[in-house]
Image 1 (cartoon, rainbow, N blue to C red):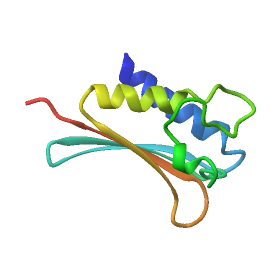
Image 2 (image 1 turned 180 degrees about the horizontal axis):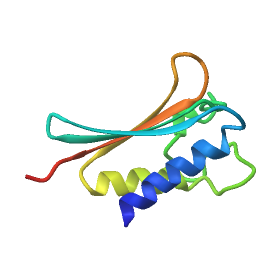
Image 3 (image 1 turned 90 degrees about the horizontal axis):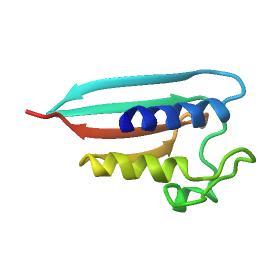
Image 4 (image 1 turned 90 degrees about the vertical axis):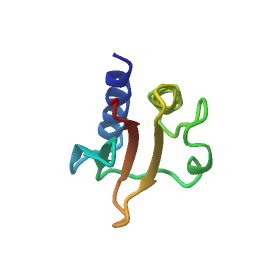
Amino acid sequence: DRLTQVVSNLLGNAIKFTEEGAVSVEAEKRDGYIIVRVHDSGTGIDPDIMPRLFTKFATKSEKGTGLGLFISKSIVEGHGGRMWGENNKDGRGATFTFTLQVSQ
């Protein structure tokens, strides 16, 4: 349920910041890890937010508390994974990625 919350938070953010274009989710299994990416073609991560992206109350949105990414990263790390976000190289939108080790 908690990992569903992570994906839901990431999708909600992607949709909120993408007025037109696309939002996609990709998952793959590689080298003993599940890698999940939520990619959008929206406004991207504001440079003012980037240094504190996963901290409490970091937001440029008028809707929301700025807790979603903080909570999502905490959940992923609580499951032994990693999470990060970056602007897309083409200058349009952002991609948020998290990894989790596959149970043997």
